[in-house]
Amino acid sequence: MRLAAVDIGSNTVHVLVADVVRDRLEEVAHYVEMPELGPQVARTGAIGSRGKAAIRALRSVLARASAHHYDHLIAGATEAIRVARDGEEFARQAGDAIGTPVHVISAHREAELSFLGVASRHAARREWVMVDLGGASTEVAIGRAREMVRWASLPVGSGVLASTYLADPPKPEERARMRRAALRELAQAPDGDVERLVATGGTASNLPAVLAKRNPPSVLTSDDLLQCEKRLDGARALEVSEKVGLPVNRVKAMRAGVEVLLLMLDWYGLAVLHISHEGLRHGMLQAYLERGGAWFR
Image (cartoon, rainbow, N blue to C red; front, top):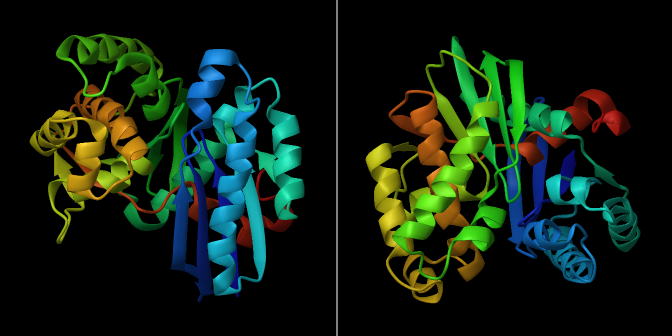
């Protein structure tokens, strides 16, 4: 069986296509675009006309995914759509556009689904922490093996932080203000004596390529993150984009995202973070296999 999952996030629209082989997911294809709903919602409280760009992005990624002839599609939306006053209407319009209901996922369920996806490959025996850094929020979950035991949704995200605090290229004083703002929100993070931090989301999955295009690392140290920060901040986003092979908007968001990951490492007293390319969309598909149409509840 071949499944597909669409995730309409605060920075991005993703679609994952995966085969189910012996009750495990094997990735077939992954497509992404960046309509950036989060900054618009943060400024105005509504998606408004930006929704048209998001629906165009949605149709675009699904047109590419359709070449892989999946059997079933599920779709979810996260923080920007959750908090926008017109979020439910946007979800209805998006669902009509793709012929599949778009479910607005609660913060708690988003944490559960991301944890489910990450734990499928990265669970540790003792306590560990998953950090799903998105465009407008960060889901943090403490786990024991594959059980999520504590969680929190923090109102910090790479896209909103970058658009609120950072110029192009960022100035040191702007980074300092952003760092203080993010650090205030970390007080809500769940406590834990964790042995491992596993990060997922767009910033985490793309940072290794900033360090090395060939054989990008799967584990990053604090020094690695600081080196990424230096490279991302070293010129205007267009120039950095050409050097690292990432879209301009992704570069801008990652400038804020790397700061959040540095703060998370420090918060939990760790020196390295593990990168997970599994996350929310993998969790959505695993939940669909377990619960069918009730996967989002």
